[in-house]
Image (cartoon, rainbow, N blue to C red; front, side, top):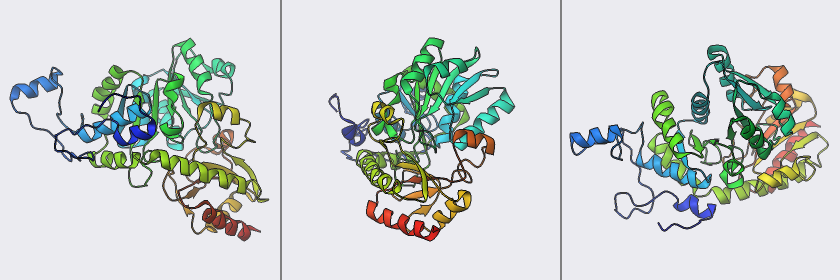
Length: 396
């Protein structure tokens, strides 16, 4: 393919693929194999030593997976990408790569429940400590940096409160202290936000969500701004911990990625219609969405995001009972964890995705018993609103 400065809409369709076997296959072939044969013993020796490029074993690299990795690298404006068997495998890999016993990780105030659990394991078993702070200003971040801090780990928007972190502020502090910056970009996808452009070192995704978009893959992606370092992670942490992505899942992700731009536009457009509806409902206490003009972080959202995405969080009257009654009264919208699917999903973070977080910590994160997280799908917005209208009427 000729080298052009392609738009993301084009990269998701063409990036990273040439007809590898020269059979004229328009779609990326599925190399469903565990190992690859060598023509000679010396070729095997050369490939294992690094003297010759080529396939060895699918835990170390696979042609189908490689197309996905190269495509995502282009989308993130990065230098290299690794595909993992889950989002948590990607999170684990980068934190293992960056830390050693006695180190400290500075985190955004809210993080995914399983990431919170992983940090707890690392502290208890390996003496790698962490702190969660709000990160509203450079000064606040600066004050939380310790001599043993090695990296800053953030989600933005934060799951599930939709609070934003100022990426430029984080990077500014990190550069002054020689720290690495890792951004979980799952809620935005690279179509709406590219943290590496702000100076972050790594960006990761639960590819299960928007990157795939069809609810039929578990996967993770990690992109970095240094090609040699990414290959080092591949041949150390990923190879030895073994949390790789299968060729078939990579093939499904490549297919899903082709519609990422049109899906994200529809998710965002539907979400904005639902936001306007929710803000008029008496049983809704608060609504949290980056591109809501009443959001105090709206200006920041415009600076670092292309659109608001498909996730809305809102609190209802009646606490936990009110939230669960609302969910139980829905018909079209399904109660399920995960997000980014074509179907609209709703869940109760306090008892589902963040149930492992102690109550006091959850409340500090802003996760109350009345908070609901809605992943707006691709259905017609009017049908979704009618479903919510029926649920609200059942709460009165």
